[in-house]
Length: 128
Image 1 (cartoon, one colour):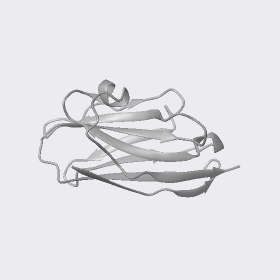
Image 2 (cartoon, rainbow, N blue to C red; image 1 turned 30 degrees about the vertical axis):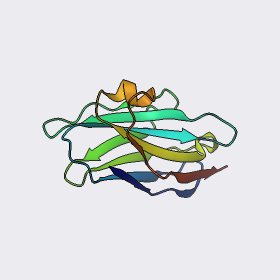
Image 3 (cartoon, one colour; image 1 turned 90 degrees about the horizontal axis):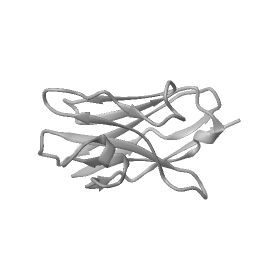
Image 4 (cartoon, rainbow, N blue to C red; image 1 turned 45 degrees about the vertical axis):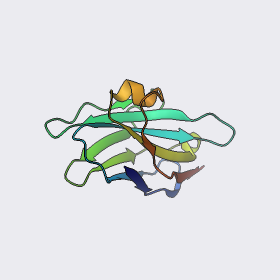
């Protein structure tokens, strides 16, 4: 499986960006895809996650710092998961990664237990 990210960039505080994570060479029907970020000098943190199967798209999970500002969605036909980021703050500046697992669920992906592949990362910079 291969994850290809796109959509990062530079934005002013209060602005919006949408990141995409395309899942390629994936044959299983179910997966949980998490978004993570790592700011300079800080540990990587989970931002949110969504679980997807052919029959159902699960309710996304979010970390408290981004809830009500970030939205995770999925286009099952395109095997692509999106991270819509709004009301961006300078503290959202980080390299954002997507990661996928398919043995368990979002809790295990966000906990780093069930991750089979990582995206290459995309830089998001929010200026004040």
